[in-house]
Length: 70
Ligand code: SF4
Ligand code: SF4
Image 1 (spheres, rainbow, N blue to C red):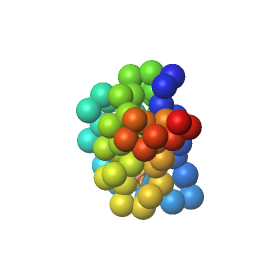
Image 2 (image 1 turned 180 degrees about the vertical axis):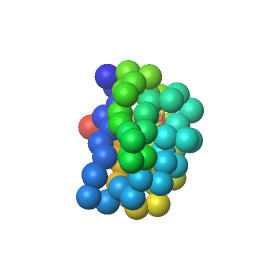
Image 3 (image 1 turned 90 degrees about the vertical axis):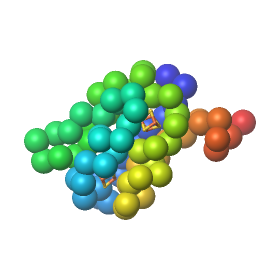
Image 4 (image 1 turned 135 degrees about the horizontal axis):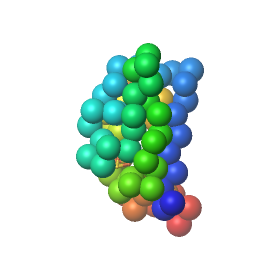
């Protein structure tokens, strides 16, 4: 998997924005609305989820934009 996704559940308020805006449908929502990384292999590293999360609970690493690990 080229991109590394992590969710800090202490900060997530289960607003569902990441689930809704991911263009690749990587996340499912659990019964309480919290994201579940269901299809990590489909992630294209666009960082929409990280950018839209109002609580900085999501992190996408190893993206070309961020040059992580380069
Ligand atoms: S980086 Fe883009 S494709 Fe990957 S999980 Fe986030 S919104 Fe979806
Ligand atoms: S956008 Fe952030 S706060 Fe909202 S459900 Fe996703 S991880 Fe949680």
